[in-house]
Image (cartoon, rainbow, N blue to C red):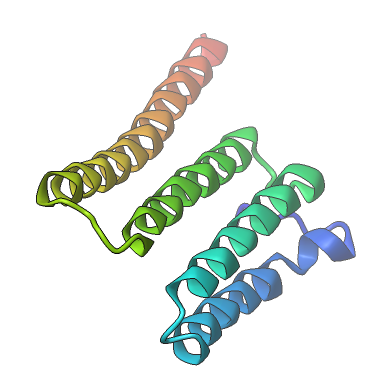
Length: 133
């Protein structure tokens, strides 16, 4: 509902979104024995999507654009962390630290999204109430 349809690049967001999912699936199926390639392809698609979101701005509201870009950069962090496991020696404490970091990133992503949506919703509601007076 929040997507712009006033230009072809903005209108194609859904196609770009699903094409990205196809690239993910292909990378994980075709490069099943090469984790380095999988991580590289995934990182490049995240960077490409973040660039697309910053340049094209396919959303009508600033909040949706902001949250999409933040989500992409947090996704980039979660994709980059498994690259550490490409080395043959990873200690259990390293594994635990990376796992906790991933959990922290997921929690931060959810918190940023929900707090932003709630704060903007409350401010919008208060602003509309104030305008009616």
